[in-house]
Length: 262
Image 1 (spheres, rainbow, N blue to C red):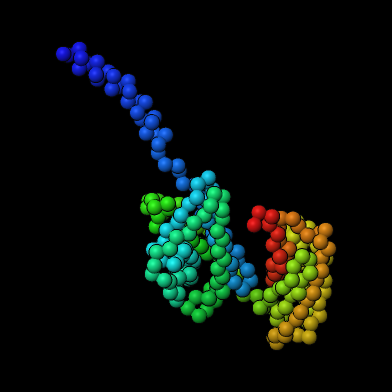
Image 2 (cartoon, rainbow, N blue to C red):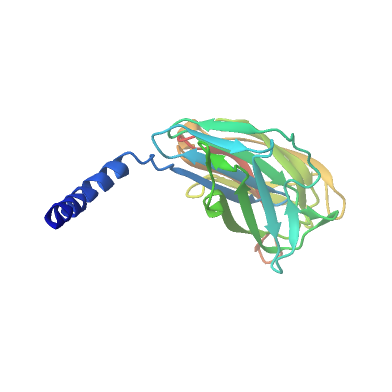
C-alpha cells in the first residue's frame, strides 16, 4: 500500500511541471501600451501633447468612470501647483470606453497661457505630470498607476517685452505671420530654420512702431518645397539686436511641423 502511495506522489511530481506549462500557455496576453506627455514651452503659452498608443497586437479598451480622459498638473520649483487641467471644467459622470486597435495612437493637445490666479508665472523650470484617468483596460483593473502616469520638466521663459500675440497661418512653404511689436531700436529681424538648416537668412524689418507703443505687424515668407524638411519643424525666429550687435528678445514661432509618422 505504501508503494502504491509513493508511486502516486512521484507521478504527481512528474506531471506538475507539465500542468504548470499548460496553465502558462493559457494565461492572457500581456497588454502593451504607452502613455506620455510632451510639453512644449512657447513664448506666451505651453502646449501639452498627450499620447496613448497601443503597442501590442491585441485591441485594447480603456474604461473611464467619467468623460475626463486625463489630468495635467504643473508644479513650480517649490512643488506648488500653478496649473491643473480639470479646474473649472465639468465632465459627464458616465462610464466611457476608448478602443484602440493594434498599433493605433490617440493624441490630445491642451494649451496653457502661463497664468495662475490671474497672473503670469515667473520664468523658471516647472514639473508637468499627466495621468490617464482610465480605471481598467480590457476589463482588468489598473493596478499600477505608474503605467498611466508620465512626468516631464519644462522651462518657461520670461515675458517678451518686444513681441506678443504672434500667430501664423499657411502651409507647404507659404506662411503669413501676424502679431504686435514695439522694438526698442525701431527695427527687428527674423530668420527661418528647421533646427538644422537656415531656410531664410536674417531679414531686417522696420515697422511703424517703437517702444513703448504696441503696433501690429504682418510678415509673409515663402520657402521652396525642396528645402522643407521631411521630418521636423519650420520655425521663424523674431529678435532684436542690442547696440553691440547681440541677439536679444528672441521670440520663436512654429510655422509648420512635418512628421511622416503622424
